[in-house]
Length: 383
Image (cartoon, rainbow, N blue to C red):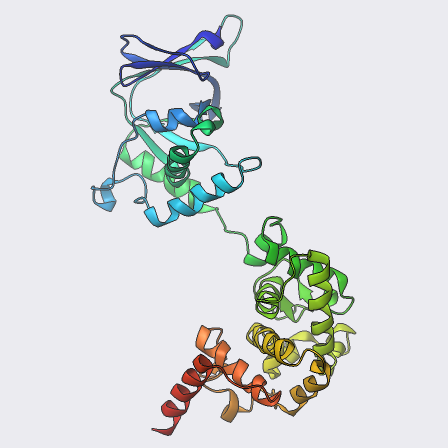
């Protein structure tokens, strides 16, 4: 039976279930698999414990030139972040299967009465080459150093038979050919661990106004989009708004932020016209700075200062927003500040410089850092 199968690992035979380890001399590594067929080639799916990922030798290609590798080099900077994801979410982390090539002849022995379920025997001198999942494996090994109780948990591994470097490289290219990273907005929409993302989503859902003008899925708006802002832009703006003032009560913080944003919206009548369908959103985005993510984030930063310094009369002071000429044609104000060569820029310095204009309109003092960046801009344009 499969439950009694053992795995030879560097001279140590390890049960597929934790707690059974004994020495045994073998020339093969044996483990239970399901056999499949893809593109007329056999492949095998196994369930490995996380501990086995640490014990099984994986061929290291890092020292080889790119044309002789089957994979990209390991980016070690990514490993702590992925390891922390496991350690911080031990009850609900999730990983997709690893894809591995074996550069050796193997034998599949079906179990009695089975065609697809059986044991795969791999020579001990075979190399395992990861086609997809090398950073997951490295992060799992790092996490096991801190949480050894995870070693009995499992991950699916898909094994292909390696028939040469060219085939391995083609597998890597094919596996990544159609892999498209989801937009940041969609990632935030589906992220229920990120408190700032939860706050931004709740503010939008609670607001009849912003629910209609914020795109919850896309991180860049198409010309024909009826929305003015993206969730990713609103996320940044909300996070800056409540910085240092959040209570930790999500509903209470969302009401606090919603009150501010809805008060701000009253001073941008064009936003309301877009929401009501009277003006195309693209026309407003093309004509005005206030309908871009940089302005939204700057309004969040300025709002943070406003609410901290004038928590009693902050609504009245928002009237100052109407003194600003938000037209993109106002190059004297916006070029070098919110725009570079006529294009809106979301660089950090541009966000600060846009915030400065809003703070000045609201009669708010500039911080030392804000003043430094403002002075640098003035020097640039007075040379």
